[in-house]
Image (cartoon, rainbow, N blue to C red; front, side, top):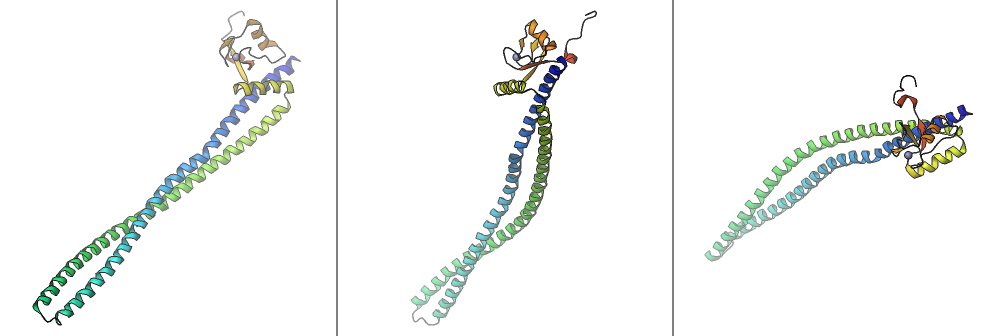
Length: 247
Ligand SMILES: [Zn+2]
């Protein structure tokens, strides 16, 4: 009988170890999706920088096309004004036309400068985009590698979890229902269910165990619980203070 009960306590201690392991694995597993999102965020930031540079280039090209259209308009206007100079009758009209032509030429210079500026800037952006495209490819490859590693890690954890849950199920089948009830009740209350007793102290709540109960923990058929924290108490011979000579 004593043998059987001892085994019950051993099983409860093992059950607690399984449950702690399961909780740890679930926590690890739960971190993976967030870790993937952090990596994805880094990759997307690199991609966004490229998209922004492309948009910038596209608006520069648009502005350049408009400036080129305006320049053509000015050239045409100047051509017409030049033609008119041969048709005017008075010197006053002639001077007025020359003044107008002068103004149009100044504006034309302004457009030409702006077009040159935009061409230089576009070239600079094209180079920048080509570098950024390389960076995006690298960032994507890196993200995919890291994501695959995390997914593989997740699969490993899931497999481990399944195995432990299987072992836990087998173990549970061999534990008396009333002991499982006690175990579950304490687990709900405390988060864990068993506590080692060392040198007459419950390591779950650090309270002294009365001598009689301490003796029962070591020898009784029934699993004993701590009167303060309710945890099921167990004793490990290998962890007690060394026995004195002649004891
Ligand atoms: Zn306790």
